[in-house]
Amino acid sequence: MMLGLFRTIGYGWIALQGLLAALLPKQLINLSTRLSLCGFENAAELEPKPWYVDAMRAAGVGMVAAGLTGLLLERDSEETDEPEVAVDAPASDDA
Image 1: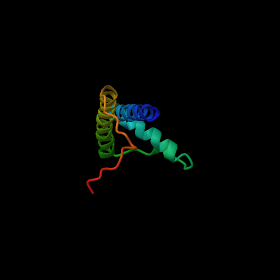
Image 2: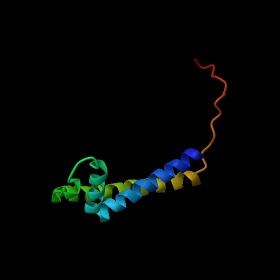
Image 3: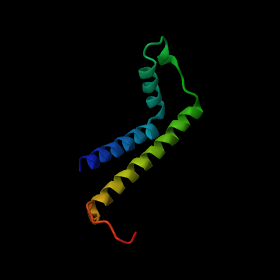
Image 4: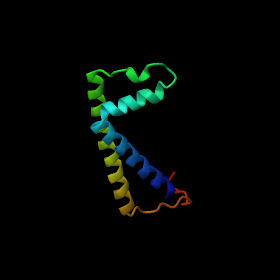
């Protein structure tokens, strides 16, 4: 039960990150650059190339699709009644 909650939160987080990357790729790149290069001088002056911004946007669209797909699959797995399997079932004598 708890694992399903963590998976749902994870899928939601992926979808949110993807949405930000798809809608605001340049701002997300600037934030990432400032956070990862905070020990360097002039890190805020770095400018991403246009192809990198496009790649970030495309990756964001993929992350949105993956996150939403995961959320839909989680919802469907909660609604499905799966049969329980007895772990301590007796061994078969067919061997």
